Image (cartoon, rainbow, N blue to C red):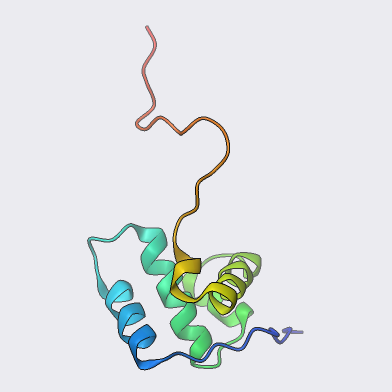
Amino acid sequence: MPRKSPFRIELSADEFAELNRRAAKYTLPYFEVTRAKMILMAAKGMDNDQIAARLDTRREVVSQWRKRFFKERLAGLEERARPGRPRVFPPRAHG
């Protein structure tokens, strides 16, 4: 049974325009496009299970980004510094 999120998303005109811009931009990293799409779908009234199914991700991931957007708005969708040594990409070949 789908659970109803307590974080109801209502967008301002500026937020709606910015999220649409991000969702349609092919040159942005995939995670930014996906997060924008999640919030746009949430604003349309879709629940986390529906959004997860549509974007082929887990409900917990959608729930996390919905909550962060609800609390921090657009700034909540940005990448945060992670603890530890930065990743090295591409992996170094040894030998």
